[in-house]
Length: 88
Image (cartoon, rainbow, N blue to C red; front, top):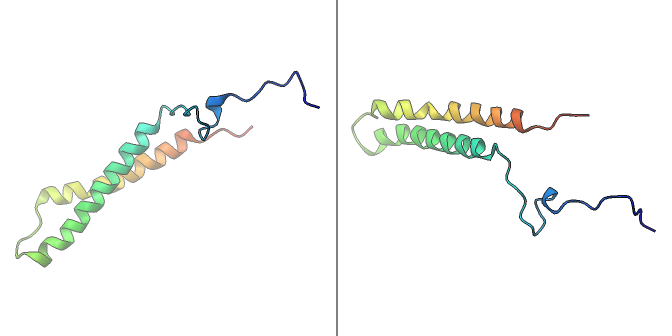
């Protein structure tokens, strides 16, 4: 027998439901962090590959672009801290 006073679960509470779960407000921060991290990694790879395929040295802008890697990592850590749920 079911409890008639119990409320049924909301459809948007389960993101796997067919109702299409709502996006959290901080999802943009995670996407930004992943993009910055990936761009930084590409810059690091380019820094190592430029001397292999040419006689030139990598440009200064590549070294600045490589600094996006730790920035993306810090933003991802901030996202993880802010999106965590408080224990009861």
